[in-house]
Length: 199
Length: 127
Image (tube, rainbow over all chains, first blue to last red):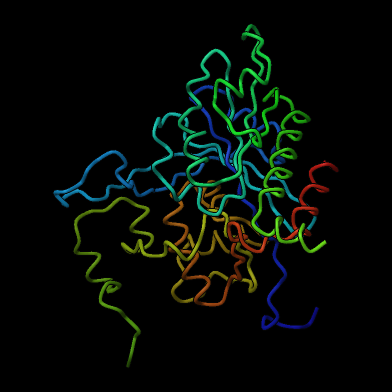
C-alpha cells in the first residue's frame, strides 16, 4: 500500500484475438455479442507490404493506409484481458497488413454459406502465417444448410481445423466459438508436443 | 541551460511548418512511438496529475485520467477519438515522465504456457 511508485502495479496482460471473414458476415455483431463493453472503434495507420506488386522500381515500396477496426473486450479475472478485433470488413485486402495479426493468439474466420468464397482470403492468410484459427459458420436465416464436413471440404481445410456452427448475435454461441479457438490454439502451441513427450 | 530540446521538437520549428491535422499537432509532428506500444499494450496511471505539470498537454492529462483503470492503447484511442498512432506518442511521453506504467501483451507463440490457456478457458467458461 505505502510502497510508492518504485513498485510497479501488477497489470493484466492483453491477449489479442481476430475475427475475420468477408464483408457483412457478422464480425462486428460477434464482437458486440461477447464483449463486456460496447464495441469501440479505433483507427490505425498500417503499412502496406504491397502484396502482389512486383516492386522493382523501388519508388513506392511501401504505402500506409488508415483502417478502422471495431473491437471489444473480455476481462478474465485480474490477470488477462482478451481483446477481440474485427478485421476491417470494407477492406478486401486487410490481410496485407501483418501488423493486425502480429501477436494474435488466434483467429475466428466467420463464414456465410451463401458466400463461402468471401472467407477464402482469410483462411489462406492464417494458414500461411501459421496463426491458429477456427471457422465459424454464421447461421443466417434462410442460408443453405450445409453439413460441416461439406464446408470443410469446400474450404479445403486441414483435418485439424475446427469448423463449427454459430449464431453471431448470441453471446453463448460466440463464447463457444472462442473456447473452441483457445483449445485449438492450445493444442497447436509449439510446447504442446514437447510436454506430451515428457509425460 | 539545457532545455532538452531535440531538433525535431523545437516549438519554433513546428509552428512554422505547414498547417497539420490536429492529431499531429498534439504530438508535435512525432509519429515515431510505433513499435513501443501495441494496440493492446495496457497502460495504467501510477502517479496522479494535478494539471499543473510542465510539459503535459490537456491530451496527456486526459489519458492519465482515463488510465486510472488499466486500459489498452486501442481503448484510449477510441475514447479520445484519436488515431492509435497519436495515442502511442502521447503515452510514450507519459511513460518517460513516470506517470504511467505499461504492460506489453503476451508475445505470440511464446510464453503462452499451459497455465495461461487454462486460466483463459476457465474464465471464458465462467462468463
